[in-house]
Length: 235
Image (cartoon, rainbow, N blue to C red; front, side, top):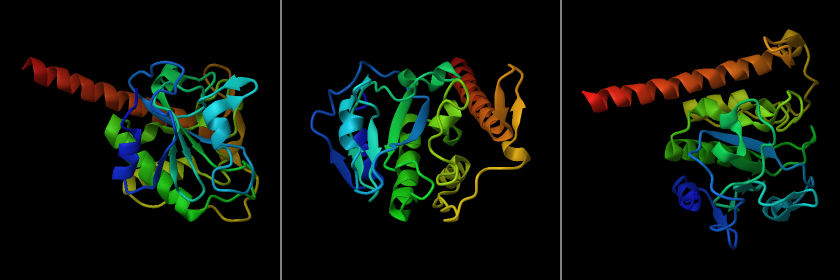
């Protein structure tokens, strides 16, 4: 159980609300964390944390908890659950599944006109950086739901028009804020977003292929670090 979530967020200088019962709320034990999955709540377009009840208790078709953390528009971190949560659905890689993923639901309606407030973006960077440090997760493995969902295209969150995951990962590495996309976002177009087939025959975009390469590189970094540790231990 991830019983130190609230402490990790507070140590990052964030305002934290511990939801009643969070320490025992779960669908079971979560394994060793290997990734952080970022979602938008697809809730109301107003209010600080209107989706909290849904993330905590679930929907008619899916019992809660639906994520370990909800990040409100004000940047307040609501710690919802310490254990396994239903938030990924089918994933492209086993290590991206619920058993190895920490879910962060970011309060946002999912509409192109619903811009993430600067306080929320700043809190997201600080939260993810602190969680990566605590659980030894590479920044390259902070992924959007749309980047891991299988089949590709099954999920769209968070929209790249409003939350660019590559910019978020860059901000984590540089300890810089996430740049806010232009208010008048245009639909994705051009070769970068054109549909192509990967080696498995799936229809994806070049951007999705790059995200997959980043994840593979992160895998290799972890494996190299583990191998070095084994060599040092045996010498």
